[in-house]
Structure formats: C-alpha cells, structure tokens
Image (cartoon, rainbow over all chains, first blue to last red; front, side):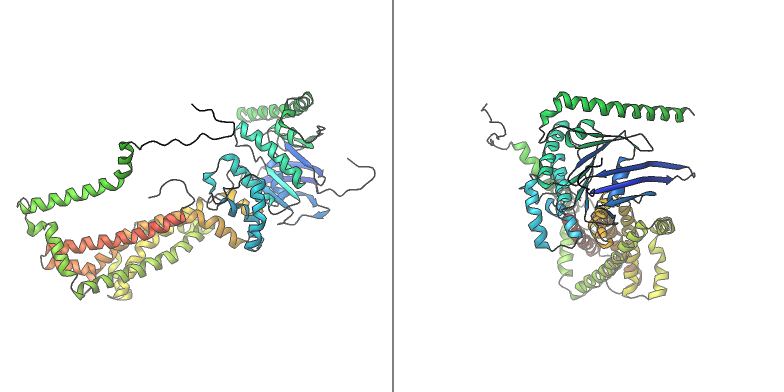
Length: 274
Length: 276
C-alpha cells in the first residue's frame, strides 16, 4: 500500500465503515462491517461479493444516499459533504427518467446544479457523441435498447464531471453480448476521462477485466476479505478474457466467493430448519 | 438474396399494402360510426312505421327539429351558459384543491393513515342526497350546483392522485437525490410526472359525476340551466325537446372529455403505445 517516495492523498478513503439496521422486532441487522479501503486518483476499483453482501449499501454510503452508523469517509482528505459534485452515480437498469428525452436525462445533474441552459447544451453534446448516442438526443428512454439506456446513464454521470464515478452493477440487466461491448466501451471512455471509478458487480469476469484492483466482500455482514491487484497490461481488449493470466485471476476470486456463497446458503438453510 | 456487408443495412423493400391491413387501420373509426348510423336509422324507421309511438319515444328527425327551434332562442343559450359556469367553476376548484391534497396525503404517511379510509367513505356517500344541506348552506343559486360538482369531482381526483404518489419509483427518487436535486426539483422531476397520469384518470371520472350533478341539482333548485331545460320539456310532455337537451349535455361532456384527453396525450408523450 504505502508508496515509498511520494505521499499521495487517496481520492477516496473509507475507514471502519459500518451499517446497521434495527428490525421491527428489535433485532439488529448488520449489513456491512469494518470496511476500510483507499482508492487512488484515476484508479478503477471493483467490489465483488455474493448477493446480499452489502456492496450496494456501501456504494450508497459513499454517494451520500445513506448515512453509515459508524466510520469515516474522506474525499481527497476532506470529510464527505452530504451532497457533493465530486461523486456521481451510475445506477442499475431503468434509472433514466422515462418522461425526459435522452438529452434532458443526460443534463439532469447540471440542471440540479442550476447551470444555465445554453451551457448544459454545450456540455451535453460532446458526451452524447462520446457514448455513441448521436441522433438519439430527442428520443425517450422507452425507445432505446437496454445498452443505449445504460450509455445515457453513463453520460448522465460523466457530464457533471465528478472526481469519482460510482457504478452500481450498471450492466447487470444487459444480454451477454451487449454487456461485453459495453465493458470495452467503458474502458475506452475511462481511459479518455481519467476518472476514479468504484464499480460494483457480481460478475467476477467483469470486475477483473475492468479493474486495477478487485475487492472481494464476504457474505453478510459484508467485510473485505481480499484486495487483489490485477496486473494485466492496458489497454485491454476483450480477448484478454481468454488468456491464462486472466483465468487464473478468475479462479482465485471465484474460490473466495464460492466459500462465502456456500456459507450463506448453509446459514439460510439452518434458519429455515430452526 | 443480396449480400449485406457487415454492419451495413439491406435496402428497404416496399410492396403494396394488402387490403386487410388497410381495413384494419380504418376499423376503429368506421365501426363505431356504423353502430351510430344503424341505431339512428332503426329508430327513425320504427317511428315512421308507427312501431313505436313518437309521442313517447320521439324520433331522430323530431329531435333535430326540436333542437333547431331551441338553438334559435336566447333562453336556450342562457341555459347552456349557466350550466357551463356551474360545471367549470366546481370542476376546476375541485381539481385545484384535490391534486395538492392527494399529493400531501400520498407523500406523508401519517396524513395517509389519517385520511385514506375517510376519503373512500366520502367517495361512496351519495352527493345528491346532500343537496338539501348544500342549499341550506349556500342557497338555491349558482353555488349550490358548483358545490355539488365540487363534491363529485374532488374525491375521485384526490384518491387517484394519492394512489399515483404511491407508484413513484423510489429508485428514481434516489437518482434525483444523488445528483443533489432540491426538494422542489425532486417534486417537479420525479413525483409530478408519475402522479399526473393518475390524477388525469380521476379528472375523467369526475366529468360524468360533475355533469349528472349539475343536471339533477338543476331539476330541484333552478329556474334555468340545461337540467332545468330538460325538466321544463318533461313538464310540457315534449319528449323531442327533452331528448335534445340530454344529447346536447352529452355533447358538452364529450367536449370536456376531449380537453382532458388532449392534456393526457401531451403528458404521456413519453409512454409507449396508445392511451385511452
């Protein structure tokens, strides 16, 4: 972790983040526990874990949508503001406003910041082009394919020019082929924009392909059980997924997750029996 | 088969549209008109063949004749004017209050629990039974009818609006929050667009209730208005004039319906498919 010569301030630093909910019967549900991690500027970090491990909860905490019960979050060394222009979130499927056209959707964040109309237009235009939606500006979301919707979703986050992009399983609902294409496109866009990315997924292969680091979370309560640096040279083509080195990473991550998933299934069965 | 280059597109081929497809396009307009024409013709025919007694049942030509006489009188247009005012004042006032009320009761859970069961109960209360009470409060004039209209429209609009609030997508609300939207913008960009289609359904339901409210209230309390026009025709045993009045009111109600439908189409431009 500690680089010897230069002391770099991490883009995002989370210390001992914990999230608990009190259920109606008074029992406490601990969603995530003791999450400590630092992300460097320009780094692409993915979090993978079994379903229900609290990955999305953590992302929402970083976004400011949820307040953690414990822990500290720093953005470039500064405590997190509740609403901040430093982070933008790319949500899961169908999170575009169905009643707005593609351009209006993409410009939404700027509209919230009360940016003048002319400037919104000026800033949205190149992004429409970048994500390959030229000619669809005036379309409504229902007229777009799933892949195109997620491109618009991506553009909506990029347009506010955030330091950190938070992505919550953005490709989960896409078909396998579209998904692969979108992964490649995302890397392309990322290399152009140099954003810091925190990416949540349950697909191991996706996490390894995209990331500089893959963080593996345990079953609930979610903790970090591994932090794996992916040493595959960039730029990466989709073909890299079939190389030996890639498959080794996949085996490594899968072994970690499988153990967690089994533990969850077992405890579920126990509670059912009990 | 011509070869299509990868990523290219085959040229669009055009053929003559088969007759069955053309008819399918006309069907929705032609068939309802046909029903109308056939029914009117049957009615006219049975009256002229004395199968039914025109004194009781009138006939299309007699209704048209009575109508063409009526529309030449200033009295008739006064009736139209009076009823229209009662309708629109009550209708718009009800919407203006019911939509915010529905938004609040839908949004705040305590308000929801406080009002929801009672709204349903009041909605089921026969409003015309309250007419004598309304007359006691506001008198026999214009306001008694406007209040009856108000009562008929308020409940369906309020109920549909708060049902609409419950359909607001929490995910979209989170999106709005995450981009730092103010409360005002969240309402404008997330809540209202989801709720409006529901409120409009309530407004459509309200039209029928408002019209019957105006007409029946005028039977009892008025010297003028279209309800009173019908009442007078009945007293004169003039079935043709009576039916003309009824059809004219239907026409006005359809006009109001068309206005709301036009708003609905604009509001729902973002939705796939056809509405209504």
